[in-house]
Structure formats: structure tokens, C-alpha cells
Amino acid sequence: MTRTGLVLSGALMLCALWANPAAAQGSTASSPAEFARTAERLKPGQWVWAPAIAPSGPVLVYVDLSRQLATVYRNGVRIGVTSVSSGKAGHETPTGVFTILQKDADHHSSVYNNAPMPYQQRLTWDGVALHAGGLPGYPESHGCVHLPYGFSRSLFQITSIGATVVIDGDAIDHVRSTEASLLAPYDAKGRKLASDTLGSQQFTWTPERSSKGQMTIIVSKREQRVVVLRSGIEIGRSVAEVADDDPGTHVVTLTRTAAGKRRWIYVGLPGHAEEQGRVVDEAVMNRIHLPRRFYESVLAALQPGTTILITDSAVGTAPDEPMTVLDAVAPTP
Image 1 (cartoon, helix red, strand yellow):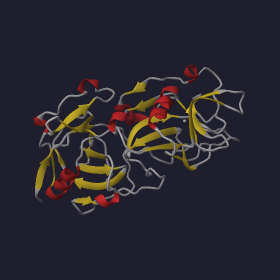
Image 2 (cartoon, one colour):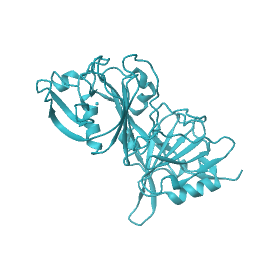
Image 3 (tube, one colour):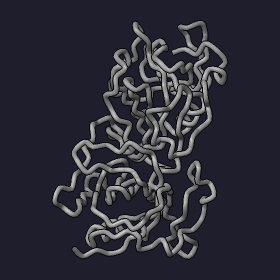
Image 4 (cartoon, one colour):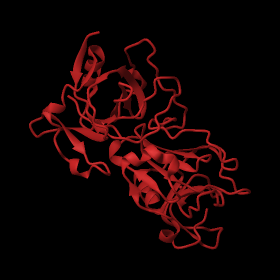
């Protein structure tokens, strides 16, 4: 198999509120991106928020009632995960695919004694919404999805009217039935996505699935795989040889100098702030080898703003096998 070096090193990484918003949140400190490795262990009020992993693209919010977790994806990649509290018995949060109908950062309930509902994002006209609220560690709302105050504020800032919210699972039985994957399980319209598998193939390249939009490249050191997403849709996947024993996660983005030259710079993720703005060293080059045709196809599709994530987590080598970690990135020209 003919291969060529590709510099891809780095890290492609929600009814009423009855008390003072900030006092009802439990732990409100955001965690480093790597903390998502233990997302199942998030305590009430805890969250992870690393938007630099995918700085632009369509936003999808996935609420898993079974695990009382919400995951935010942008451009098809997970950028945040948080504990939530959904509707209690008799006031169950409905499941399905919803769109954000209305946004109000300073909303008050018209039903529950004018109770504050900060950073409200309405999903139904009969009162179901995402907003900051109490997080006791179990379903206790009147149908809405409660989020930590800080997470709710950050989410409010990146969503728009019409954005998709998928609510799934069973809060009453409270059993684990779904995964919060690094790759979005649905597209921006709420349609179920199926991940490609390589089988005996070296790579797949189907750019016609998404012809324009922001591109994100994910490199899995563990599985020696590369996945390419554009506008949140997988358009390519390949085997790879990744010669990098750094267990950390890093994100890099493609920029263009005043002279028109392409340049990869690091993005400072939570926990890696010291990397912000640093130019990717030439020594990082040649750490990733890909089939030549795949490499050339990716190279031709690169545009300023492309983000690369290199992670020690999996990207899935079998059908429906998810990635369960939030990580970061590395570089390439």
C-alpha cells in the first residue's frame, strides 16, 4: 500500500426554577475536556464544555433521559456534556425530535408562580424547554430539562432558532440505553446517522454526502483511524499509521497568513490553555501516514477554519460502535 505523510497531530475534541439560579446548581465548575472520559460519573451540576474542538458548524443537542445527561455536538463532534434533571413521574419530559422555537435569557414561568427559568430555550408551545434549573441528581422537573446555570448560558450563546434537540431514553426506569458519543448519533435535522465501517477497505471517500461547510478531521491514535466530517456529516474514513505516544488531547485549526501561506495553530482547550495560538512545529509533521489517494482527497478539501482533533479514544471499527470520549487534536498540511 502506497502511503504518504499527512500532518494531522493534535485534538479533534436544559421545569421551573424555585430558588436563586446560581444557588441551585450544585458544582458549577467546568472541567477539562479529558474529564468527559468519565462522563458517566458526572455529579449533579457538573459539566464539560470545550467549544474550541469544533468552533463552527450546525449544533445538535442530544438529551439522554436514561442517563440524565445531555450532550452538545457542533459540526458532528461532541463539544460538551452535562448532568440534567428531566420531568418527574406525572410530568415526564416527552421524547422525540424537537426544534428550538423561542429563546429568552431572562424568562419567567407563566404557570409556576412566575418562577425564573434562566436561558430558556422553548421546545414545545405547551411549556417544555431547556433552561437552567435544579439538579438534585434525579428527574424532578415539571417536564422541562434542567441544566447547570453556567452550561445553560454557554449553550444559549451558540444555538439559534430552529436548532435540533433530540430527546431519547426512559427517565422512569433510569437504565442505561444509549451512549453519548464523540460523534453525533443524529444529523442537524434529527435524522439517525450510521457510521461508516472500513471492513477490508483501506478508506472511504464520499464528499457528495456534504458538499460544503466546515470540516473537522478526527484522528484516533488507539484505533489508527482517521474520520473526516463536513457540516456534521461523515464524508471520509481511513486506516492510518499514527506514530504518536502522547496520551494528551490537542486541537489545531488551519489559518492563512497575510502572504497567503497555510499555517496550522494550536487551539487552547480547557486544560491546555498554554497551547493557544502556538504554531504547529515542523517536527509534528510526518507522524501520520495515510493511503495516498485519501490523503490527496483530504488535502484538496482543506479550507481555512478546518479543525483537526487527535485523540487516544476510538472512532468505531464495528457497526454502531460509538466513541465515548471528548478529546482534542493535532496538525497537517
